[in-house]
Length: 205
Image (cartoon, rainbow, N blue to C red; front, side, top):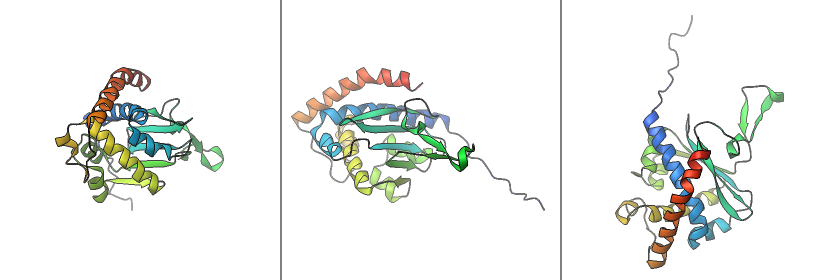
């Protein structure tokens, strides 16, 4: 007897996907700049090996963003709902002797997967901190946990640069201090975003 219960495919939430993709573009450009400008973020990234790659991904359809540390620099590699050239996610191999349909990602050291677009939207807009999202099992991590914690510290500092205190203070237990030096760094990061974001948008279309 045929199975009367057919699988139901989840619907796409295009508006939230576009918002999350936009946040990834903004955040990726900002983190690339902050890795050069902010000494605390630079200190964290200096502990990572050259060639270290990472991805933040939204299951099951995307979008995602990718980073790579190369020649001592932390580089943002882009964001798209589908693969594109020069992106870490294109590093794929076909298993079973090259048969189609069996694709495995290669060479990505750390992957942070949001379970669905709703979880990504809450964490990235930002309405929910990363610790709460992890505690509620809204995201999955594959890779070195020490690198995950290091990256989480980088994100906390980045949030302090991107949002006013009343926003980021509610998302973390110990908000970083933002003195005069940090305010000047914030201004430089915002300038880098204004100059770099258009190029990243063009490369991601």
